[in-house]
Image (tube, rainbow, N blue to C red; front, side):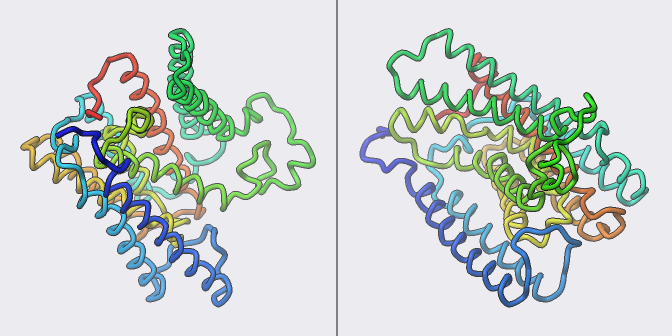
Length: 366
């Protein structure tokens, strides 16, 4: 069969996913409008997780939405999907396991000593600086790709020019996030926040994401969560199209990025009442189960065990934070762990992309 003849770009999985996403967005917008008008619930907020009948019903809605989104991709996955053929390399497997173990450690710390947990999530701690360093490493990988593309010369190929623009954009975005994470090294160089920014900034710091902390965190956690955990499944299940579509699709994170980023979905507490956050978590869990099932079908016991372990880790650790999150001395402590795991995923995305460009790793076939 010719993989490109008479095919809609992306095929049924991408079309169904896009339609479902639009319908879900409309339903969520209606629910949000109702809650804002009738219940006086602000659309983005940080508060202790609630489990009243109404909020449990919202969680059921989030589960249904997640099944619809991920189920569409799995049900219509192409017969020759890389889910049925490719395997993770050993390095990615090891990093995924140790990243999840780190998540277990944070959950254990919540149970053992909330005071220490709060201490390690304050400004200028190892977690904050590690997050910034990881993002800079990821940015550096895209800088290297940019230089490599410039050296080879994009020529008149508009796709190559667009790929170059994406590489430049990713390098800048990761660098900007890193600088925002450490408030542009304000405390390192000891400079004062300009008065205009200090008055608007929720924490009086020299950064921009704290001008609207709740909004920026919700958008960041949801957007990057889908990018790292759901887009890899889209990449592996959609039909292939023209050359330009295939080449742009190659910028989507790979399955190894999804595996290493799994802990992103397991340490929410202060943002748990937000539907987008719950959908991100449930979609991630379903994606891990799909990867486990695919590995089992191709008799890859190690990868099956890995993704089953990751799925169990999401359930166990998120359950621990939801059950005992009230022990935290500050409701936002868990968000620092979320941001750390996001930066680990983004860093590996940059490394994985660079390795594939240099031919150092076998990519899932496109």
